[in-house]
Length: 168
Image 1 (spheres, rainbow, N blue to C red):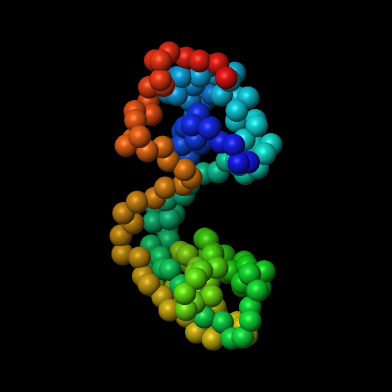
Image 2 (tube, helix red, strand yellow; image 1 turned 90 degrees about the vertical axis):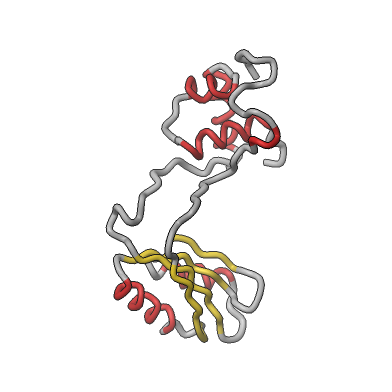
């Protein structure tokens, strides 16, 4: 969907901060009626902009205290589909991307502890297409953003232009 407007972006920001917010709560925050917010959310869902709603789990609270970013270097040509299959074989992989630069892919790995993280890295390195890996251990998470955010620099996103609710 190419035609997201500022209100769509504000709705996405609200949902990324709290996917359980009611249409009324979102509407109050951005200056739309609850039915207008619902129509926009339905349109964003049907167009594929919103893929679903999920819980964001605190990995440490869930017993996963070891976290790493693992760069994968492959032998020969390895397609993105093959890299996806490699990542999907490891439940500890939370995200995977193809990347530019020397490496072919980057995996975000979360494990219970350093011993489990080491076992996951060994399993990844055993894959026939993997030549080597380079890992960076996460020490402290400084920021987590899930989805687009409205920029406060471009204006106060809590109050819509004109002040009151509007229907769109």
